Length: 57
Image (cartoon, rainbow, N blue to C red; front, top):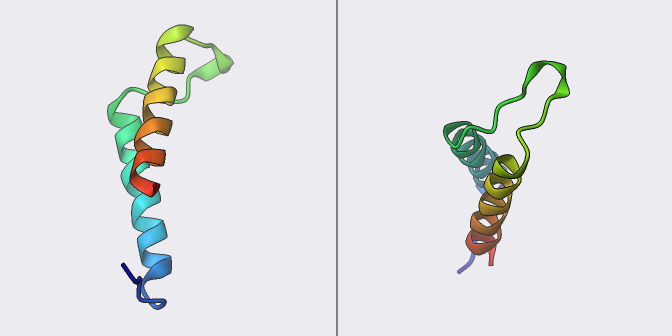
């Protein structure tokens, strides 16, 4: 599939915003004081990474 060069920046920004919204919906929000929730956050980040790589490849 060939991507129109003029639309490429729009596709990149739209993909970034889509994954940012998905991350917020999954509960990946910044916490005051830099506290961590342990394994739950790592699992969600792993899931997001897998979805992103699956969409790219």
